[in-house]
Image (cartoon, rainbow, N blue to C red; front, top):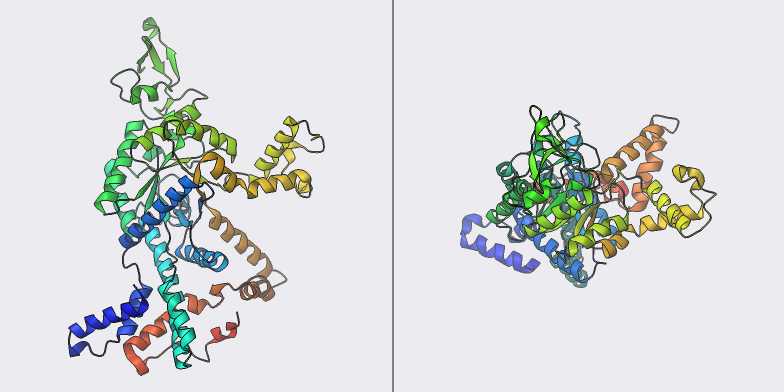
Amino acid sequence: MTYQNTIAQMQAVINANGPSWGAIDAESTARMAIQNRFPTGLDIAKYTAKIMRADMTAYDADPAAYTQSLGCWHGFIAQQKMIAIKKHFGSTKQRYLYLSGWMVAALRSEFGPLPDQSMHEKTSVPALIEELYTFLKQADARELGMLFRDLDAAREAGDEVRAKDIQNRIDNYETHVVPIIADIDAGFGNAEATYLLAKKMIEAGACALQIENQVSDEKQCGHQDGKVTVPHEDFLQKIRAIRHAFLEMGVEDGIIVARTDSLGAGLTKQIAFSKEPGDLGDQYNAFLDCEEVDPANITNGQVFISRDGKLMAPKRLPSNLYQFRAGTGEDRCVLDCITSLQNGADLLWIETEKPHVEQIAGMVDRIREVVPNAKLVYNNSPSFNWTLNFRQQVYDAWAEAGKDVSAYDRAGLMSIDYDATELAAEADERIRTFQRDASKRAGIFHHLITLPTYHTAALSTDNLAREYFGDQAMLGYVKNVQREEIRQGIACVKHQNMAGSDIGDDHKEYFAGEAALKAGGKDNTMNQFAAA
C-alpha cells in the first residue's frame, strides 16, 4: 500500500468515528502505521518464511544464490548488522539473522555464563528472538522517520520533485526485518516440550527452527566431545512436533533445520526399538559396538541384542551410555540426514571437525542420491582454526602435486613468519572463496558464523581498554572509536538518534502539537555530527 493510500485509509477510519476523533491527524497516524509494519512476531514469521522459501528455490536453480548470516546475541548487535548491510550493499536480500543456543547460554542466561549444554532457561530463547526483532523494527522506524522529516522539509521548500522522490522511497522502503534461523537446541525435553517451546519461538518471530538429534539432558556443544545422539524415531517425533507448531500458528511454510550431530558423536543413550531386520531401529542398532557373547559366560547386568543370528552385547559405559563402533560417524550422519528429510525437515546441518569442502561434499553426494535437492545450513565456526586448517590444506595439496614444501613446517603453519608467503596467500584465497565454492560443490544453501559478534565485542573492548586505560587515555577512544565512526558513517555515532530520541519527538508532536516538549533542536550536542 502506498503512502497516500495509507493516509486515505486512516482518514476514512477517523471520519467514520465522528467529530470526537477530529483532532487525530491521518498523516501522522499513517506514518506510525508504516513505521510499525509488523505489529506482532507472528506477522514477522509469516513474512520471513516466504522470503526464505523463495531463497531456497532460487538456490536450487543457481547455487551462486546462497544466503548468509552472523550470530547475534543482542538486539542492538542485530540492528547494527542490518543497518550496515543496507548501507554497504543497498539491500538485505539473502542476508539473515542467526540465533545461537551457545550465545544464549554464555551471554543471556539468568544463571550467568554457562556452557552450551541447554542449562539456560528455555524462555530466554524466544525472549531474545523478540528482542532482535524489536531492534530491527526500531531501525525501520528511525530510518522512515528521517524520510518523513525530509519529506516535510521538501514540502516546506516547495520542492515538489524532491517531495515526490522521497515519497517514492517511502513506498518502496526495504525493511531491516529478515529471516532468522533460531536454535532450539535438542528441544529442552520430550516432543511435547519441543512443541511448546517451538510455538513460543514462532510467536516471537522465528520462521526457521534448528533442532539437533542429541539427548536433551546430555546435550553438548557441536564442537566438543561427549555428544550423545538419540534413535531416529525420537528425533523424528520432535521434527513432527515443530511442524505441528508451525501449522498451528499459521506459518504453513515454516522451515525446519535438522542438525545431525552423528558425525562427531560416539555415544547413544538407548538401544532403538526394532520390529524386523532392516527397519530404522535395526539400522541404528547396527552401528553399536558389540561383542559376541558366549551364553556360558553371561555376567550380571549385561544387555543383549541379536545380530545376524548371534547373541551380541553392546558396549555399555559406567554412565549407562552405549558406544558406537569407531569409524561409523559418516554413515550414521548420512542416514540421519536422509531420514530427517524424508520425515519433514527442510534443511540439514552437519557439524564437521574442520572446514573442508570435499569432506562436506562427500556426505552431501551420498544424501543427494536419495534426496536430490538436499541442502545444508553450515556453521563457518569460530571453533575452527581457519588459518591453520587452510594452510595445511594447501600444504597437503602442494605435497601431493610434488611441489617443494621443505620451507614450511606443517604443524607450525599458524606462525606469523608465514604470513607473507605464497602458501599463506593461496590459503587466504581459499578462505575468501570457501562459501562460494562450498555452495557450488557441497550443497550449502546457508552459511553462518555462530559466534562472530561474541568475538568482535571481546576484541574491540580489549583494544579500547588497552588504549583508554593506558598512555593514550581519551585519545584511545577518540582516535580509534569516535573518529572512525564519523569517517566511516557509522549511524550510532548519533547515539541519541539511534536510541529513538527523534522518534519520540515526532510522537510528542503528533500527540501534543505545538505544546510538545522535544529533545531535539539547535542546542542538541548530537548536531555536532550533522556532517557525519
